[in-house]
Image (cartoon, rainbow, N blue to C red):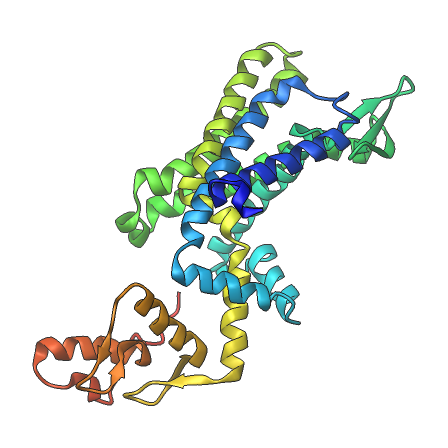
Length: 347
């Protein structure tokens, strides 16, 4: 199979596009229910997929990432995986420790974007659409199968019509919270950059606002200006999709791999822990310590201190810092038992 393609990128794109086309064929009942108004979103999505694979393969080919992915797949069926997945991908518990404000902000943006995608992509590729009967009832069709028939003025129909409006409001609130923090928090102000930190937020804000304006035009202005605004909204979505794999928002599709990393740390930490060669504290799993040494060797980097009889990867972070200082200070500061005051700092 691999010999049929010029690269992993080519194989990934071919298989993914082929799978999408097959699902479109099934979902649209042999392409009889294709909404050409969503054509631009479809093109933007394919460009996003190409960018995602390019970025993911480049990142996945790195020796440390290969180890995490390879061992993460083996540990995917741990008993703790469902709980870890919920904490990392659903409730964002890892952000809760940084404060309820940041947790709320991430929850609104994260789930606002995810739910928007879960609504938009099935509509774009024809996996879900609506048909209306003369009696005033809507039929929701999913993957070519009539799923449910609901009254046009019912609760389910209302939520279906306004799903993207609800998620847009979630994103707007979350983005405004993020912008306020970035403008007021001194640490954030010192570290942030416009293109990396602000541009993604402005793009999400622009998409959400133009989407709400479309609804306003249809409901209150009887469709006046709809065509121009729909193009503006569509272009903003396409630009964001093209930008997404290469900017800060790339962590959204990459986020599921955090479950691999957590399983890796927990599993090998339960087996055996590595003691620091200087202070004796257990600071990381033996497996991870050895993997770090192997990865450094793969990249032809050797941090073995032959005179002292250990590799820097075998020292805990505080002792490693002090050892580096000792090389400049001229005396073995790493052997001093007192550790830094911030060694257990959180956040």
